[in-house]
Length: 359
Image (cartoon, rainbow, N blue to C red; front, side, top):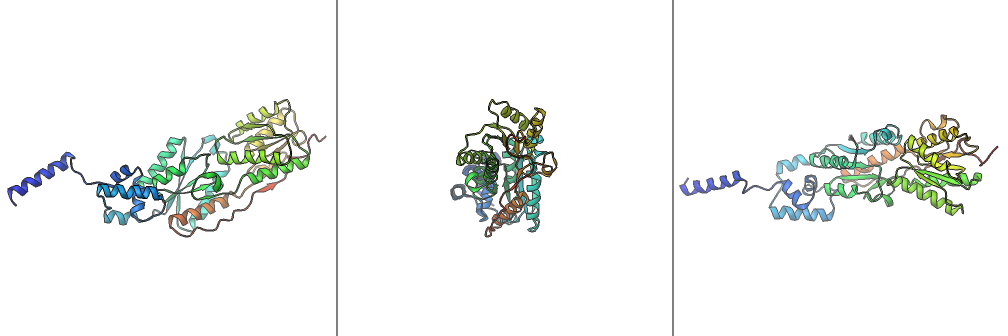
């Protein structure tokens, strides 16, 4: 080798050592395109889950940086983890008493089992932790896709997941979620039946204790309650906000019963709040249902066994979980989406409702 060649090679090595010349990486492409490394991988492996706009930015960034995926790494990235994720952001006191998640997860597990997939579950305390969990899922390639529960009004998560290159299925009516793919019946159907049931019994002052503000299902149930009253020609009823917990349901019940023109019936956002409301009414000397009719939502296992047994709305939540799993697996494997036919909400009449002011 000539002295000149040796000198050129030494100069190049020095530049590399000093960081002045460096081969571009997938991380560089992701940073320039404003996406996750997982999204870049999805594009170069022809996998779904990345929008056309993001795909164009990624390809442009790769061309600008003259980056191409390593053949061996590309082969490894095509191996499926056979795992999907669910990140739950809920306060511990609510998560431990909410019947939705155990039923939903059971349905998901049944749906995934037939396809050989597993569920990676993570519980977080706040929005920042939730976003970090999704980012780790994407960067580490730990999951093929995720479920989105507790959909919020103007929810930012569908856009976040799209930017990360994560396929998602939301649990909410399509028109309300903002997610590209969703499953879920309209919560409002059960509330409408509850209002009509109470009106048929003769109630005109029908109150509502909502779930936590900002959730799609809370907004849907409140809107259904308001619209049903208007359709029946009944006056707008009083409303109190709660947080799906027993203690918040009790506080909201006191708020409604303290009104000068207190309601003769209350529809609650879930059974736990309804049961707490019944206890409050009894402590205040009211009889359920003689002085106050009460309706819940969920039909938890305890609902038929309290005194009086609770009138409520029943939904087949495990069926939601199975349907969500089938849809997510189909999206991950780029197959035709299955037909989704969820059971309608069922209104269950028990002994906690009656005509108002019954002696």
